[in-house]
Length: 311
Image 1 (cartoon, rainbow, N blue to C red):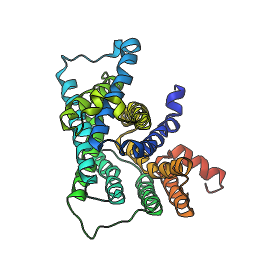
Image 2 (cartoon, rainbow, N blue to C red; image 1 turned 135 degrees about the horizontal axis):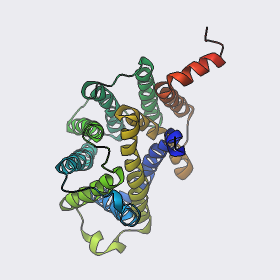
Image 3 (tube, rainbow, N blue to C red; image 1 turned 90 degrees about the vertical axis):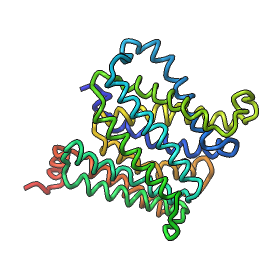
Image 4 (cartoon, rainbow, N blue to C red; image 1 turned 180 degrees about the horizontal axis):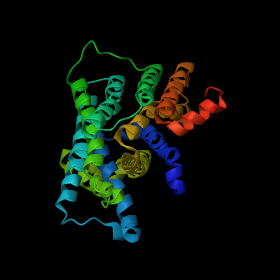
């Protein structure tokens, strides 16, 4: 077993940390450009980061475009995971609160887990789903503790769009496992996903001045876009896709629950926002849920034996 496979779970923690960092970077970006514009730049920057390295060092794994199955898979990934999810999410954010959106989007691991049972016939032990619920509860706790207000008394189109976005992300996660063949390389699939998504969303941009006059946007905003393009997208999304292939859709999705906790930590480090006892409690729930849901039976037996619980 390669070291990368042995420590894959630890490597996978890069995903919630980079995604949480994107919330911090976005605070600088959204002050100067619209959400859709930032998504276009984010995906195109990711493609610019990935293609030169793939062409130089990974050309032998380039997909065969004559393979109709690959083209259909790429179309599903782009339409559902790239275009539909982001348009629905930002459309929902126009009329709903960030906390409402965060809690609704946090449902997508649930949708993914049930989809895995229905479509992939995957069977997991009861502790996996118990850990799932524990991690979700912790994520909700952290969101509320960060000062968010839940308002489900006045449900509207914003919440509905976020709900559809959560379904889209779950569908993307499942399709990445169902339709992908072993010889289709994840790096190339994601590079084309970022390129095609960015190009498709270009007509939806609200301000084209930044294309012809980059100096119209501050250096802080461009640094934020570069961060989002490289870390949470080129690295985070690609690693998430690889995690789906290696461990399964539900396993990969569960780690999304760590994003609010990482975001709270970065808020503390960058903006000096307080990290309260309630946030620590919620984070403990998330970590406990992930541990319970992902620990193997062999490790569980070992723990029982060390604790004197095994007969």
